[in-house]
Amino acid sequence: MLLKTLTELNGASGNEKNVRDYLRQQVTPLSNSVNIDKMGNLISIKNGASDRPRILLAAHMDEVALMITDITPDGFLKFRPVGGIDPRILISKPVKIGKDIVGVIGSKAIHLQKPSERKQTITIEQLYIDIGTRTKDEANKNVKLGDYAYFMTDYEDLGDNYLKAKAFDDRIGCAALVETLKNNYDCTVIAAFTVQEEVGLRGAKVAAFHTDPDFAIVLEGTVAADMIDVENKEWVTEPGKGPACSIMDRTTLYNPKLIQFVDRVAKSNSIPLQFRRGSGGGNDAGRIHLTKAGIPTISLSVPCRYIHSCTSVVSKDDYHNFIKLIDAVLRALPSELNQLKISSLISS
Image 1 (cartoon, one colour):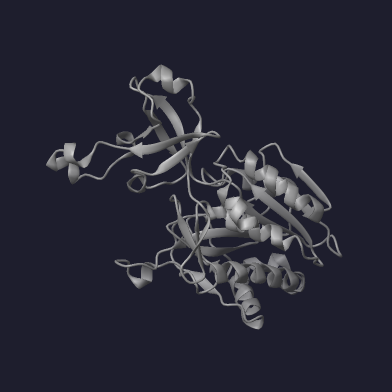
Image 2 (tube, helix red, strand yellow):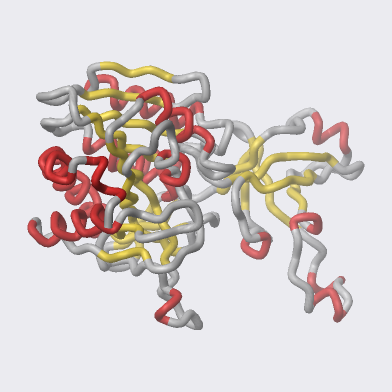
């Protein structure tokens, strides 16, 4: 299964090769051209009935992970996060380094901590990875500085129509983009599987610059916080309520006319849609919409509980409706852009 395979592959920011190689195999039969740019983005182009408009669909390949930065004299591995990770979720989690080195993230045991230490939030500096070695020389035989450590999480069904896995952010966007390339459209579709989103939206900036699209759609996994002890107004999105359309985030203010367009398309196709509440976070849209003279951009996403952790949870229905919404938007977009006349988007 496409989504299962993608989530179980390892590919942190700057180390996306395994994911890129698999995706290249998937999209090559579906595309008119496929190439890898100097940043490592995978760019697939599928020609439409007309060369214009050229629509960029972007989904990032990288996931959050850990990088080994030091080896202690007694054989423990110190690390830094690659992307945003809450240190509190890391204790006792199993990780894999390379192809076959398994480790466990540890810290000072609670029964050895002073009462004052138990009240403090744990930091990355207090954590280490235990790979079962006793000396630095022994650890050095298996691990090098700069190696990545990945969460070990299987893709599985969960409860009533949900899924759990690692890296739904943003392998769920990558999977939906592959599914979209199986369809034919009047517009030319540029599929960009981008790199280094989690460390600064870096790949998207390069991909957008050299593909020079007329319009862009960012496909993401986004935060859902519908859980106990969180007020409803802070839920951002809710799994099971449909894909989400962003209104604003830390890097982008989305154009109201385009948000209204997505809403109309969803309603006319009976696709459930929610709007992403909250202004935190950001995604590749932050770089794409500022490229060259500016690129009109929207962001569509699948709500993910426990995002940026070892295990996230999504709704199967949201994923399937996400794919339907992308398809419906692409079919309606050429005529919509013609009516709006892209330059008029800046007017109120």
